[in-house]
Length: 196
Image (cartoon, rainbow, N blue to C red; front, side, top):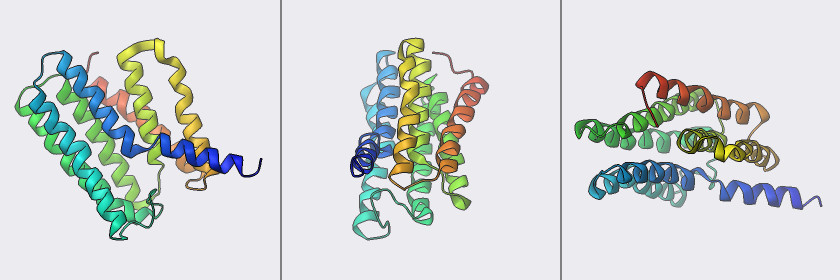
């Protein structure tokens, strides 16, 4: 039984991984955009700048030992990947506005604000990206699908438990990781007039 909790925590951490869920968020956004008449070339560009480039850079950091482990446990080692992700995602935001792709441009801008805030916080404090990304996924799903997906609210709690048991974060780090998107994303959607 002693070994079961850490194994389960590790499994949950791997299944609900930001490197999987960030592209999932972008894919959901782009599918909504495609269903509203956007072209695949634009959507493919978004996936490249938001998923492929950061994903390849993440693998480079691991292979070159600039990141000590898959979780990038050391706070300072997270910063190059976070700043690269902020920069590449901003290219997608600019293109979306340039092509007048509304409301997708404002949704992407909201995600970009969130990425910038997480990156700035990470300059001085280790915050749980796992909890933040899962909270973002839940909030975005609630906006898209409404109360039908209320059960997703358990996801950030489960992931937070896993990150604490797996000894990758403290309680404060996972709570902070969940609070930032819970405040910033709805506020950003409201200020930018994002309607679903």
